[in-house]
Amino acid sequence: MFVKIKGTGSCLPEKVLDNAAISRLVDTNDEWIQSRTGIKSRHIVGKETAVSMAAVAAEKALEDAGITAEELDLLIVSSVSSEQLLPCTACSVQKELGAVNAAAFDLNAACSGFIVAYQMAAGQIKAGLSKKALLIGVECLSNIVNWKDRGTCILFGDGAGAAVISAEEEGNIEIPSVLHSDGSRGEVLTCKNPTGERKDGSLEGYVAMDGREIYKFAVRQVPAVIDEILEKAEKSVEEIDLFVLHQANGRIVEAIAKRLKQPIEKFPMDMMQNGNMSSASIPVLLDELKQEGKLQPGMKIIVAGFGAGLTWGGMYLEW
Ligand code: ACO
Image 1 (tube, rainbow, N blue to C red):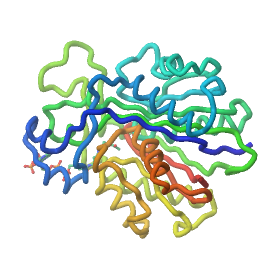
Image 2: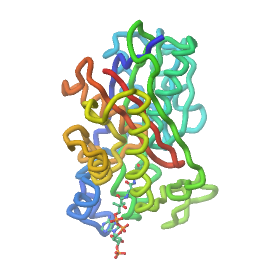
Image 3: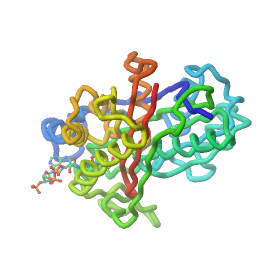
């Protein structure tokens, strides 16, 4: 059985927070943020929720795929920042969509979440246990960011991206894909569940990060994982048309392109206007590329994510 992305969709909150607005909250400035991260602005939830954004992105992906919610048999949501733990976000999205025949659950693999969701669903399809799956990455990171910590609050944005994948007669036979985790290095990016009232200024309950370690991890592991995928796919790096990477920051993507000795034009980026949306970043970028006509049938693509856990991985797709 083969697997193919049949449709994509996305939803970004209405409210935009640019670097000038952030510099009124913490001691920073547009020049520092842009030169270190490439980010100019990001969307931040107002009235939107993880469930509402996920449902909108999902409806668009279903329409794009030309299938109904009732046809779905699997619905996976990846999120680390949904407002709700119970019921899981996926079940609430199921209710919104009327996806009554889908098994629904959440997963947490941080910025690698969409990659993990894709590989879990593709595995179910290959095993004959699923035919049509909806994958959603959704984040309300503005809810778990400490708006007094200039080292982290400048980086993140909110949003949702969705993709419908289905069992097809033609597609990638082996789904060349790779997943890795290293819990021993988990302390470099954390967010503890707040056990009591949040103490003003403390990092409890908020994202805490060792930025330099994350940078080194990404720049080392992502090219290595891309090499692994290329070997499995039996492709050379030159044959790849696009590298759709997690949008953590521009400097990381540029360093990865340099290590792979590939032109930066093969590495589309949207963190400039969306910030880092963790598990939503890859499906939102895929949807934007599709809307812009930059994903054409037959294109060879590598998608790769990396993030807290630590987790990282990716896969080769023929569009
Ligand atoms: N504005 C102005 N100055 C700042 C800011 C800010 N927002 N943040 C930190 N600084 C200051 C620091 O206080 C420090 O000042 P000092 O020298 O007087 O002590 C100086 O800038 C340098 O700080 P560093 O943290 O060493 O800055 P660095 O050059 O490493 O850049 C950054 C920080 C952008 C976070 C970088 O480490 C990075 O890109 N890391 C990757 C992290 C990342 O992308 N995380 C995303 C989440 S994880 C994921 O998605 C996988």
